[in-house]
Length: 532
Ligand SMILES: [Ca+2]
Ligand SMILES: [Ca+2]
Image (cartoon, rainbow, N blue to C red; front, side):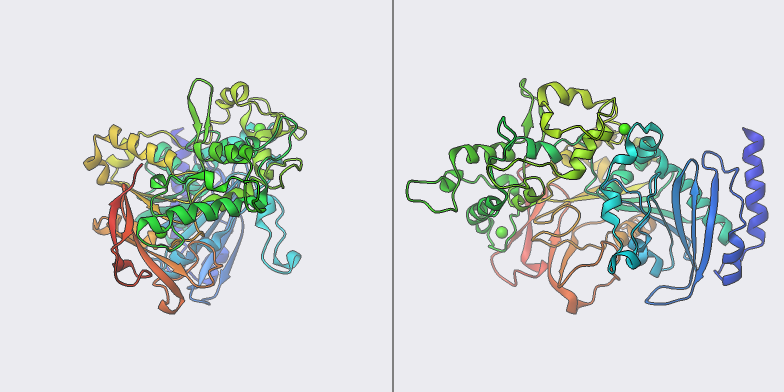
């Protein structure tokens, strides 16, 4: 191995000499000739470079695309007047795309940014095809790529991200001719999963990691199809209808929203809310906005979560206040044939069983008792559930994780995970030195919902890593007409675009309205312990 490593160092050193620290058109053009074929563990091919002039709040930068073996797509943007930081942006769902614009905010600050497709790319219907936004969803939510494809599943699980980090860092170092000062990861959902996986498996890659709503800590997160499954009769017909979900939500909000001190559409502590569902029950003279006894039993099961017959919990319940998220899983009206959310169906067909049952598999045939224990070879591959972060801590790494309390992916597995980390590193105080968990009332999966959903996590993690200023209470924002992607907004926010602010606290606290003052202002809230 030694000669190979040495030869790469020589290649990099030679290349470095011909590049300038500041980006310019010629050095960007020259970068296309950079040979990284001998980069250990990540033989890399640059497939294109282009120099982009300063515009729209972004500095001039060199845009680089390429791949690392076997076919992990990488994109890197190298700004002029580089600040020495490297930032990598996570992906979402089943990835397969590179949405590097999500890292525009660090790029605007002079940070070199990168992202990866996690080991597979598919032809993207770009804006020219759709007449609007690129159609990322079709690629990101389809699972056919994983059909009998262990290599790419391994890349999706963790190897692809690791290789993309190696490739991106090598490109940054070669271009600027000097090493990276600080490296940061940021992502949510699958991006949060990537972040935790990096802290667990490759603790030397990043100094600071922001891992939002990490997917799959609960291995083979069956809630994405079990919620459909538990709503089916033995004939496969939907019991609770989609149009009844808002009725349930309204009843829960009526009982729990104001009970936390402020009727603002947000339940501050979902675990403190124990709604009386009998108010929903149809009586002899009731209207359409009521439920049958059988439908109320479904709602009770949905809140309780899934268990095996020996009492083992295998999935968590719908968060109180987050009921509208069920409309993704209960797609049909009562009595109609129940259909499964397509990505949930694909997970079962192509990613979780030892032998992919393939395109004809019907999630409706899943038997919890028989089939759940069969998901623990492949289903565990992408699970970021190793709580031993000792090495990441020893390297002085910092980790911020967060999740919305209305998230249908459930905050409970993340809370459990953080508690396990605390035990392993020697208690809460030791964990406090490198780890923060924020739970955000009213927020859905990564963003949206009825609460605040916009945070400057990046400034928090950079300050923690670089100045030892540890994050305390963090201010969340809800913006007017918010359609932009997470991370793409410029900081500080224009106050004219802010609808309201609220503080979020390190776990186990939620915010409670103090009883006076503007309920849309962070100053009007005080911490209160959550019931979980
Ligand atoms: Ca409330
Ligand atoms: Ca497979």
